[in-house]
Length: 97
Image (spheres, rainbow, N blue to C red):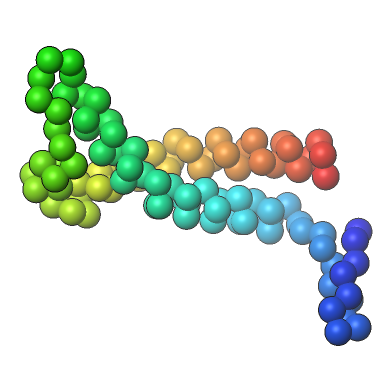
């Protein structure tokens, strides 16, 4: 255990497994919410294929609406990614920590 003294009050810098898991899940969900729209637009542009007109971001938004166009398919993506990241992080903490 490490101790950190702020204003002569000791704080323990040791986290339980549940706290570590909650922090890992929260960090991945927040990262996905911020970056998923960019990944979704990139996938739409790549799906247009070579030789065809590239689908622009405005076309995707106009067709599906802003929220639906940017965050379409996010729930399955989170169901796929969050458990994997949490597992990797917990193994890392068990080995290194």
